[in-house]
Image 1: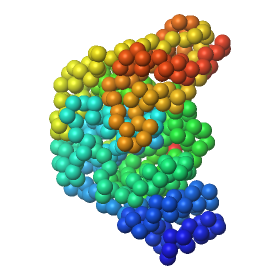
Image 2 (image 1 turned 180 degrees about the vertical axis):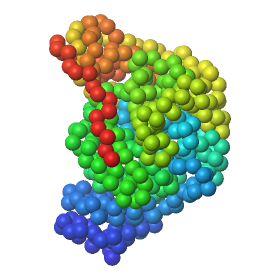
Image 3 (image 1 turned 135 degrees about the vertical axis):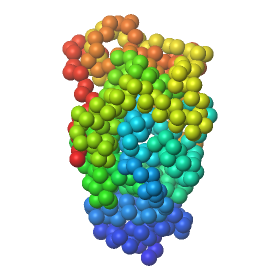
Image 4 (image 1 turned 90 degrees about the vertical axis):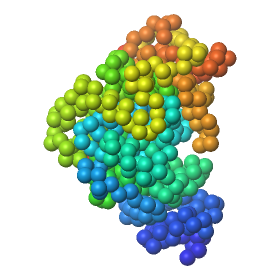
Length: 438
């Protein structure tokens, strides 16, 4: 069947069969479909839609386009967490060692930052020497030794997704739930998991800003995971303000290590709260724990005893990084950076934060990527001092920008200041965890 026949069929609103979707994905992988033909079908899908059966066909085809990892010999339940991305979203670096401490094997395949959201791989690479480009054999070896490993997607895992995602980004077809589900789940299902917990963001810093859209996405992801035999749950968490204290790469790793060292500042506690919630649900789904209260107790013991920190130290060593950051997290911070205070221009209460604008401001000084090929500056970042509901006086600090020089700071500082809305009346504090989808 020719590409134009499938494009025409979906253009006219007809349903694609399993075989037709397989033909499409095969054409993507063997490059017999041109990019303009792939783009045309993606746009037809975006405009005409996929039903639940087509969504599952697409997910399966993308999953089967590459290899599936086999961790059956590990002898432990296998579980992972996936986030739909946000600003200051750094919980993976806490969750992986916590879950491993509690007896779960965590084969974490992560991504890089793109747009206003950060990426776990970029954060990890701010640790000197840390290698995120593991072979499948090395990935297995590290999981066997310390219970978790963190690597990037290889060319053999859901290879169709790399091409399709790039074209979705270029053709404005990213925010469509069936395509998001197929993209996320084809990669996660390839990890050979027993359980998966999804952190679906909502709010101004999320890709799905409206709660109703986030909920629909969470429900679709959970249903798909369970349909493919992986016990799946989703936590809908708030991204109407940055998560925790720091935004950046090295600064976010610094925050995570401070948490693992039981040295969390008040502004860091939301990061810990969300990490504990997601880890606890991983333990329950994996059968390691029977209740949230038991899970929280196990997690608390791992944190307070220092076992989780030691697990992270072991992983850093095994992946070639400098483990001294666990003893001296300040090593991650570049002392030569210029610090610029972002101050309130009037008194009142912080009523709203444009979290996407804040994330984009950090991208603007090199803290993230506007395009996949962009280089990043791992040291730059931002420290949040005020959050929604906090009282503030004119001239008080909203946050601190860490950048290379004063010239870099001035255009960004205005964007950061404008990201905060200050009102006379005090709004309600934001609840971090909005809903659990099972």
